[in-house]
Amino acid sequence: MNDFIVDDITALLKSAVDISEDEIRKNLELPKVKEHGDFAFPTFFLAKTRRMAPPKIAQEVYSQIEDRLPFGCIESAETAGAYINFRLSSQVLSEKLLSEIYTRGEDFGFSDEGKGRNITIDLSSPNIAKPFHVGHLRSTVVGSCLYRLYEKLGYNCIGINHLGDWGTQFGKLIVAFKKFGTEKIFEKEPIYALLDLYIRFHKEAVGDSSLEDQAREEFKKLERGDPEATEIWKRFYEYSLEEYKRIYSILNATIDEYTGESFYNDKMDDALALLEEKGLTEISRDALIVDLEEYGLGAALLKKSDEATLYLTRDLAAILYRKKSYDFAKMLYVVGSAQALHFKQLFKIIELLGFEWYKDCHHIEFGWIKFGKEMMSTREGNIVFLNDVINRAGELAKEIIIEKNPDIDDIDQAALHIGVGAVIYADLAVRRNHDINFSWEDALNFDGNTGPYLQYTHARLASLERKFGKEITADIDFALLKEPEEKQLMLTLYRFPQKLGQAADEYEPAVICSYLYELSQNLNSFYQKHRVITDDTELTNARILLMRCVRIVMKEGLKILGLEPMERM
Ligand code: ARG
Image (tube, rainbow, N blue to C red; front, top):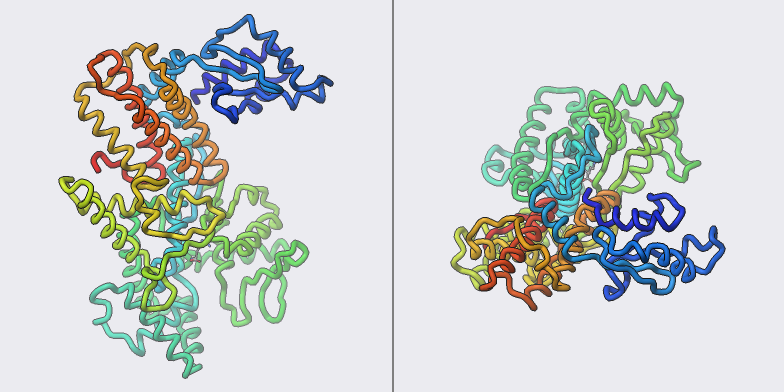
């Protein structure tokens, strides 16, 4: 990573304080007040060992480095209370940083931290028959963002769609199809036809309790591999998959494998045998469970009294299978918070099996997403269909484009990119543990902290380059980039790799969103005071290089989030 600033400050301090380089690095921070400098070193943590008041320590350390300044990219330093504040040289900063970004291009921020290591990411995972719900939207976009982020850190990622394609609901669908369905219903939008069958089943079952028994029977047949049941199931599966894939391509979803719950049908026995071998299972009220009461996790149910397996049983088979197939360094489950207990049970069982790698498994939780009434489906009260959301996003974005820039080449394509960008961003910008109150107005506001705003920032940079019309080079006079707004932009650019690392450590796309938003705002402050293309050729060359570097980072950031970096808007 291009840590040259931190390297310089560390080298300088190392000569004055007797602590490890790591400790110095760990303690460096950004000053709370910009006027105080560009980097700060607080001395509080030294007070105990040195038995001295922090301001005094700061003074003392400062007196030892004073004579060595300027040093590397550090122009000057001063003390303020317990802090030593460093001011960087714009010239050294620009020369080192912009050259690096320019040469590395889209690789800037890339590290090989994860080289040779696998991360499996369980994402999206909708339930067949119930249509792609907006709850799965958040899993899809958060999971895909983490996927791209970890790839950027050098990991090999495997995106796994753990489709809900197994379980008693298929028994219900098969019964409903045999009783009320015809071939005709699948002619268009088969996925909605499946939902209708599912709803119909539940309606009819109110008056006819035998339906539930029939459904269980059908599912059992399916589990046994009965040809007729399997054939119907397969068709439902394929209809659904086709629709999902259409949506995934719109959302830039990163899915490598569709190994849903059905995939583990023949792998559960081995998993259960392993548990039994380790003496973890017991029979309670005719059901097979793992008693996790002493860990505050209740009883983990693995087989019902009628021998039917459960969601947890399949997840157990899946986690063992994935470890065996991928030997993952991390296994991430991007699933709503409502399933917290489920994953705690799952990981606990892995721990009880004696596998140390339970520590590598993480439930990446997220809150609810609430759409306004207008998006609620009339079919079933409270479901919001992703498809409707995407269509609406495109329509609204189109209205805005027609108003702002009607000459744009392919309006429909642009509208889709912007509309979908708005939805994805609204989903990622809110920290995972918070619920989202989705509002179209907020999401599509071209001036707020939104996807379209960032896409617009990128388009503006692209248009600037077109206007410049010549090749941009790094062969410039770096001393010309000396305005405070330019320095601020560079300091923000410098933090990109570190922000990627932070987002990955916290599994938190919102970190990237706020970073890009900050970069956009820095850019705006710059635009307000300065012009890029002027009669001054040297200055123009210098500034356009800076703009190019901002664009590189903005583009990479948008791509990691899954947003199209627009060339024109
Ligand atoms: N299909 C599940 C649901 O919609 C999500 C599956 C998440 N992944 C997993 N391995 N359990 O609730």
